[in-house]
Length: 523
Ligand SMILES: Cc1cc2nc3c(=O)[nH]c(=O)nc-3n(C[C@H](O)[C@H](O)[C@H](O)COP(=O)(O)OP(=O)(O)OC[C@H]3O[C@@H](n4cnc5c(N)ncnc54)[C@H](O)[C@@H]3O)c2cc1C
Image (cartoon, rainbow, N blue to C red; front, side, top):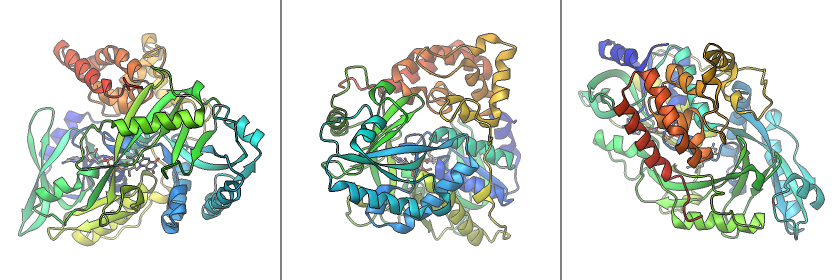
């Protein structure tokens, strides 16, 4: 595999235009790039920070149709997403699995209502259903969800949905893109648009590591910058009016003991009309999310007081106790890029995607969900073919197995190391010649030192944050443990990337400053 420097040198030497150039390395951009490369187009993706640094590492980790959108009667979105869910599970069984959910009912009247709704949800998934939904007695509900408040429980409804690891899925898309002959590079920011006769024919990009500026020519350019798509439209001197409404969602991570067992909790409607999930994930419990409108996007959104209060109050209400100080292991926020519609509240906005072609030919794609990333890529590349008059080629992504695909999940469905799929033997082999790499990164985390080496050599990790936030999920699972692991990670990375002590110290300081924002000091 080429190193980042080799990729960069290759970009500098290439004068032949790319067929498809994608800006933004989140779910949307990676999905479009895989779609393009799998059709045989020469494809390049540039990401200004790290792959999945934005919203795509901060989701609720659900691969779902969205029970909430069914209640809003958005049947097309739900059934399309359920179809995508089925294919994500088939194409990446190492990253997506079936998760049992239970909706507890505290009134007899709600049982048939939610029971019917979840039956419809199951029917809509057709042959790609993950399992039957069923009514549970109060006793069976309490047994499935031992952590929740049992007084007043009248029963529950069990249903199935998909769960995944979002940033690991993004890395699998990156590796799939590379397997298909596509090129992707992180820490390369699109800073300008190249045009000829008013038509876009490339971008200007700046390497964040060296400051070098490159001119990259392309027949079609896709803007997949998430909540930042409008910045690129402004660079292109196009403002289509406001396109994106930004909505923030925050999650808490609690110890597994807070919600023992392997079943997830779903509250379809809290007192203020929101959906609340508590989901087992890599040995902890994720609780979320919120939906707060935000005026302007930021790269590192921080939880608002109103969000922290909402989560603490609802944990208290449904679990019968609020978390003790220190029990909130991590707290993260993400920004949804939603397609704006008048002054509608963000919680009421559709999760459909939209594609806009500017007079210059710049193609912008936004909205959607992680679960619909493939469909978004498919639609966007179809538009790119029209705009750039690329030779027609059929799509293959519906059944394309992603990098790491394996039917053999040796560690059982929930073991962390499954995320590496068929790469796992090669990762384990790293420590057979060097047993110190077998050591855990931290006693409270499921990651080992060899994963840092793997991330640097084969997954384009460049910083301590890349490793602790997105190649492993340390920052998202336990921010304090991630801070304690940072010096070890910095030392391993410095060896791999041939960096000096100054770089190492700066990396540790920068990561610790960032990670402190994931600690809820008022909880
Ligand atoms: C709280 C929350 C929970 C969610 N939960 C779920 C869920 O459970 N299931 C689900 O299906 N969906 C979920 N979603 C939605 C899903 O996460 C998003 O739809 C998806 O991640 C958006 O991906 P994206 O690629 O469009 O944006 P992003 O992931 O933000 O990617 C955009 C990328 O563009 C890069 N970029 C920006 N400007 C430039 C530039 N000039 N040059 C180069 N790169 C640039 C950014 O750095 C960023 O990496 C959730 C969203 C939120 C906020």
